[in-house]
Image (tube, rainbow, N blue to C red; front, side, top):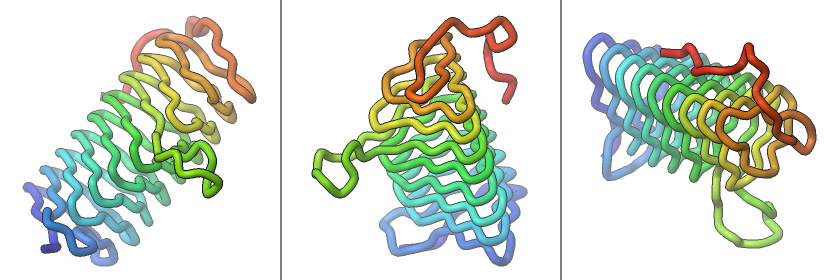
Length: 192
């Protein structure tokens, strides 16, 4: 089976592909979605209401996405991933398999999340990062496999996160170290 099922008021550009591949389950998209040209959404993907992509987005099979999610141009969601509601993934973000992104999360341009501790050298299985509710990841940050970024934490641009980031802290540097959130960064993201 392939194809897709969608709600009301959805726009899929002519040059976008939704329901790509042969899967037992079709792609399901809620109301008010906009999928722009060049984007490919595989089969066996479930997407909530008010989903919006930039151009040339890839969403692989086995992905579940909540409501009010923005996926920026040239972003890749590599499948077997869970993304909550009110999430903003900016341009050129990479989300690997086995990743969990909770509600009200912001991930800046060109952030790279990883899931393979020793690529190609060993077969230890894949474990993507977990981004807890309200966290923000700055542009060009890199998150290593299995790390958790805690609730309302903030990862500074360009940081390399090698260890868990506690809730309500700032991670900065290479490798990232944590410190108290500066006052302007305290509180919840303003996505919803």
